[in-house]
Amino acid sequence: MLVNSPVNFSHWHTEPALIGGLLFVSWCYAIIIGPYRTKICPGLPFTKKHAYWFFLSVLTFYLAVGSPLDAMGENFLFSAHMIQHNILMYTCPLFFLLSLPEQLVDQIFEKSPALEKSAKFLFHPIIAGLCFTLIFSFWHIGAFYEAAIRDKTIHMAEHLSMYLSSIAMWWPVCGPSKRVPPLRFGPQMLYILALMLGQTPIFAFLTFSEDVLYDTYFYAERIINLSPLEDQKTGGVLMKIANMAVSVGVLSSIFYRWSTRSATKTA
Image (cartoon, rainbow, N blue to C red; front, side, top):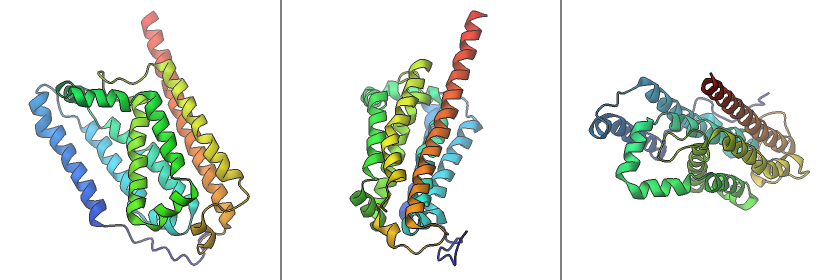
């Protein structure tokens, strides 16, 4: 329950860097999905489905970093910051990949062999999984976490690096390309299980520590009826619950599609 909250819930960030960045990305998407699509893929129809996914990607990104949730996570609650991270890692990148037409992506790769080669390296499951896990872990080391909280530029770099590494993390599961394809169903399941294990040390470190690890939250004004240590443990639990919920959902989807395809082949 909020206690005389100093958080202004009517304030949403409108900084030029944030709004301008989102508008620029949206403009680039519109150009690629519009005039550029008709140029390199004349027979590829425009589907509203892809536009809806892109809109959801931009919307969830802004909700994570532009809503009052950002002020809560930056100044008062570690658990709110973990909700931010979960949105940036598990929803925005997934929605973005779902917004990309496979045929268009493959045409872009075909016309740019260097880009295709780079994508095959960066989106290799070992590279993508390691980068995602290491970047996520790096930003939860005390000194770097505090630096991001106290410096706006570093904080933006933190969120952007998490978002971009999460795009790489999701690619082996749902990459929209046949030239740089996702993994087959069996390896996909092993990949998801490995990612779950990769986050366990950070989760355990945050949840079972008997000390408050970040000074910002230790000295922060309390806006809910949780002590700094309880807030930290709550954040760790939220992190793991989100990880497990997404992983179980993805594993269920993979298993269903795998079994359906097997049944179709044997029919």
